[in-house]
Image (cartoon, rainbow, N blue to C red; front, side, top):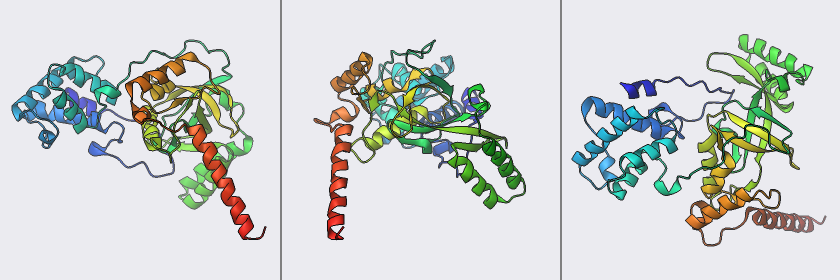
Length: 348
């Protein structure tokens, strides 16, 4: 019954006033759907000795062979301490457990559950620092990140509790009062008034997060720009994939953020750590970002980009991918030309 206990674990992610993101197979978010689906099917196999319908379309071996895989995976999952939780951890368990089986079968099984394929898994070398590196102005811990807060492959919005000592002393008085007024309006079921108050709170750089236990917490809003990398813009080739990859890494996770300063758009330029993993290293090694050498000279970033280039993963599968900073410069010029033509046609 070990898998049943895995499936019944409680989640405590906060929700905001917006609707929750659409839920995937088995009622979990798309990021972890493969993990939960495999756990469900292993639990089902433990009871019935039946493998899932449809798997044969993804693999080449017989039903008898498939049953043998699930028997091995069930034993491996039970023996794993701690049990795998992330798609990467589950993929590694599948690959290691079935390493003597046909490559097509292993990759087909991973694809069936939407888990990372062997060539996309990376070995990480940079752990979270035990002391603040030189240049860090301050650090903070975030609430779990929502997928809607990911702007692209190198930017996101995060929320930090105002009960944090660093935040508590600088919350404007008008924001504190507005948070109380919003709570009172919601208690009276005057949601129109509550939403209007919340809009003013948000304009001040804060937000009220509503947790599943009906607890309300005032949070500070921070916009983050990942330091040292530049991912393809959303409209570029691999832009969508870069955003999806960053979402997979951080969605539902509390992050450690080390802030080095602000950029011209008021975003915090920061190093991000998720479950002790350096997010920039993941994005570079998986081939979903460039090393932004103009603003960050760290040699490890260049090395991680070169590893992805050599493996031809992510955007490096293209022969000559366009640099995001060159794409932005080119499209900015095009925009300026369009404005000039418009002004001329209107006689301005």
